[in-house]
Image 1 (cartoon, rainbow, N blue to C red):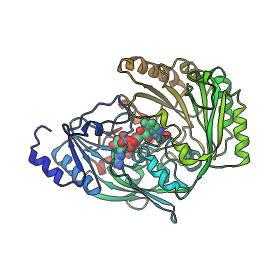
Image 2 (cartoon, rainbow, N blue to C red; image 1 turned 30 degrees about the vertical axis):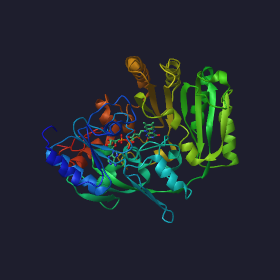
Image 3 (cartoon, rainbow, N blue to C red; image 1 turned 180 degrees about the horizontal axis):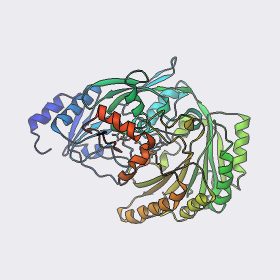
Image 4 (cartoon, rainbow, N blue to C red; image 1 turned 60 degrees about the vertical axis):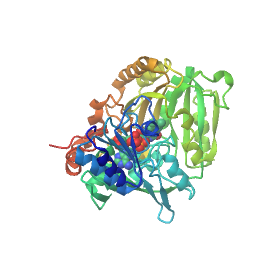
Length: 462
Ligand SMILES: Cc1cc2nc3c(=O)[nH]c(=O)nc-3n(C[C@H](O)[C@H](O)[C@H](O)COP(=O)(O)OP(=O)(O)OC[C@H]3O[C@@H](n4cnc5c(N)ncnc54)[C@H](O)[C@@H]3O)c2cc1C
């Protein structure tokens, strides 16, 4: 990068509508910060793109000079794949427009939009598509890896609801990918991550949701975790598509509906969500509450957009984070024991073990229907290790790894690509699973020189 002259940099800036940041510019450090404060990369240039023309110009500039390239959507990836050292970042954070077509029930979403942007616009028309549980996550990275959240049992993954995408590919072409145009590329975008190009616009199917939904938390004492999780597992078998219940083991946050003496204690939280408001749903919630003697229960009617932001306060950017994730097709007694044992040794009050529930509509497509292959994953477990001080790095990471290793015998061996950390390159093939060979062939077709490699990388087929 040192070899670039001022003239060459001026040439790039002149070709952009957005701003080009160099290392000594004001704003450079905030532009290179991502959600996970463990990531400390120093790109040589950050192009804050204002539109597709900027994306194409920046991409061509990096490709023609052989510079490392990264693409930033919402900047949430735990592995920090939105950034590269020394190279050029295509930063889409200025491209966040969301256009809703209520008649056709379609959302047209720019490549840098975050979940809040999407939900805000779509809910103005009582519409939604399945996204994730934290409103500051990028729509792009989430969808390209699969994307699941509270609506996924009812309506599938974010990627299942993708209808088309506009993509700038490595050779600079601007392609419209859909089931009928560049269908291989379209297939690969639905779970193959950022390997195939820069998506400047997504088109999603929307569904009527809310604006009021049924949602909330049921909090049980840690001492009842075994009994409650066992009943939860048995209940999941007959659960309707319209109901989702996750399980989170952590220290109790200072929630107003919990007695003050519970704050900071080990607890099991069952977050409950349904897009439906009905007597049957109310009955189901009461039944879940009867799995034990809750310390507190706060479930009822609330705006969908409020629930989509309910966990933001626990997931703010700027903390140090290390994740480990497993997929499970079932929760055996031994798996439950392992989870509970390690949850009793949380290294900091911000850490948690969560079990996200899929199944129902998220499991109905065949593994090869989209690039996301894990249709058998009923529970996606993620160890959220979170702390503030670098001095705690080794201790916190060791706890996550210990738990991960102890839980491995009960897991499938596969993993959700969007939960892979920086040091887990060896699990990339597990993340793409049965679809890896086809993804590698499509990579060869659209990105034979592996320009897009700041990601959970797929090697172009030989
Ligand atoms: C607090 C938190 C909560 C989360 N909750 C969920 C959840 O509920 N469900 C879930 O499924 N996942 C969840 N995730 C994981 C999330 O899906 C991934 O972190 C995802 O990569 C985030 O996308 P992003 O655009 O914010 O990330 P970035 O870090 O910006 O990008 C991630 C990857 O996608 C590529 N990329 C980004 N934008 C584009 C684009 N427009 N075109 C091409 N490639 C692009 C990047 O190059 C990079 O490789 C969560 C993550 C966090 C940190």
